[in-house]
Length: 423
Ligand code: NIG
Ligand code: FE
Image (cartoon, rainbow, N blue to C red; front, side, top):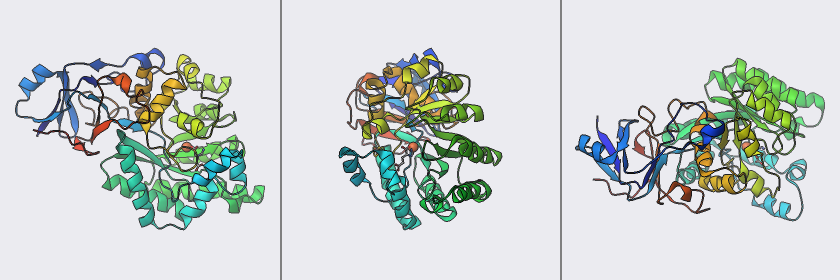
């Protein structure tokens, strides 16, 4: 099989280590090699080591000149809501004028606005909108992206959304992981009474989850567990049904107020608990005892103008593995820029650069249960790489908002076009 050798990187950040979530001081250990090369054979990393030795050994290999850039594992964005119709820039102005995110939702805006919009769109339209958005995400160094449904909230509209995700996964080079988020909101037509609210949960449990599982349309199920949205008992019921149908679990937990979401994620052994902007001490303790990854989304807090921050340091010190993701969505975090989220991880959440990089590679992979093949430049792992125009990995969260990614590769194939010299 043809070999490709990546040469002349100023640093090769391998993230090598155990193929599982990194916790505590493990998150500070970022293997960074100099004078190193990476050899890819087929879809996998074959070797990482001294450039002089590997160059000699793979003399016939196709060469990619990294021109002094930094080579890393492709970034993993483990939380997005990338399938939606129009932008919601109007809401940003309303927030600037003093309205709160939840107040906007109470008046039929927020998620409801995107639901009304998505229901009118064809699969084709949604596909082409999402496609160009994912291409933008890729251009920032992302090679794996989780994509949630959740703006349909009827059986047909959720299935339509998940089919769009499946088509994207089969047509784009990025690695795309689908999540069913039929419990993103209580649809307005089910909000009139407790009875009709329960009828929607019945529909999720009795029809939507079985269908999604039968058609293998999602790997994960997620719920927005929050005051004013799904309660803890409702979330438990939905996630238990998803688990019984073979789906792995995620939870939007304690985003805006402490509502027992982290505790529930830990109780159910969810793969990740996401947001945690308002997680309680009991929630942190419960996560520390569980296998659950804490996925922090600091772009959301910044965009909503919140001054509270997820307690990242406390989580890490308690031994909870932390991941960082964009939360790319039209309401609370319309950014495709994961390196910018790393900047916020360092400047707002006080992560070290090593912690931030592991949070967007190995621990992002852990939040998607794919640490056995993704997140490291280690022999046997998928050849998912990103190359950045910089001389030191510390520049990744430093040039904030800049797009320094020169190219990405997924399973050994070019994903984000690089104009690098190939010889
Ligand atoms: O992760 N919190 C729930 N879902 C999204 C927001 C979705 C929206 O406002 O459209 C989030 O912040
Ligand atoms: Fe989200």
